[in-house]
Image (cartoon, helix red, strand yellow):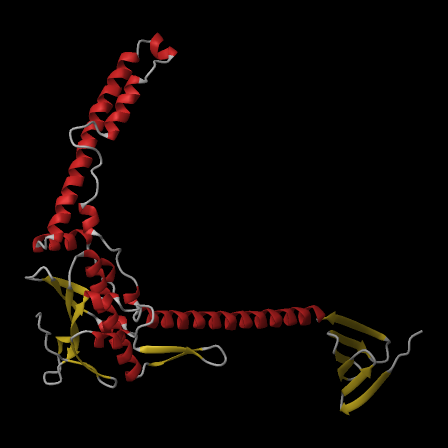
Length: 364
């Protein structure tokens, strides 16, 4: 038999505190009516008629409610923990996107279009000798000569139809060979005009190959002009307000997202690197496409005129880039803004104010 312990204390009229080795409870009431609450969840109601020995006892156990309540609390705690984890992951993602955007606007110059060697195109061999049978026609003739009717084709006399179809394929192949040869001739003549410095051909190359098409998300309104085959002049709008973020995002020590206005110094430094990176990229693409000696680039941006209070399109950077000097740069490690010192340029930039209006650089 186990050892049991039970003790009852009167703490107020009609109220007793009951303590045992397994639980603690409170009881309320007198001889005729009594209600007890136990720490294990049991509830007991006793109703009796004094002096008769008759009574009614009702017992209920709410332990299942306690377990359900605890389970709900645990689930709510898990949901809160999951929500906090999701908030941290979302915060980290937003910070990563912000940092990648800042790095991207400074790295536009690191990629460029593939170089086209027009002299190699000019000296390329024709697809076949002019006046001779082309390769596609030769293949079609061989198919015609090597054709052997199958049994069913012979049985139903369909070999004539097959020969007719193969004969048509010979004519079609001849047309395709002539088209291929004509395209080669046009490309060679085109290459000769490029190497001879034909300005109209320069603009056709730019129109057909669209070298700055992938820069449309950064700048727009690219305009090309020249009156000399040795250089190309480009004007474009940089749209700094759409590219450079105005807010800076960081993670706090607890992993939460902190969003604050970007300082003017950092904003203007990013803006300068972005504009200079675009200029380097434009020059690289044009040098890869055309046999130019120099590219002159004018960058425009919208700025508030303090005299009128209205935004105006203003020239913020004008630079003349030499092919030989540009090709000697290590694009992976240069500072875009500092690299402008390698070339004649007009730029009035201050860390706390940004770009100021400048004059166009001369084309000579």
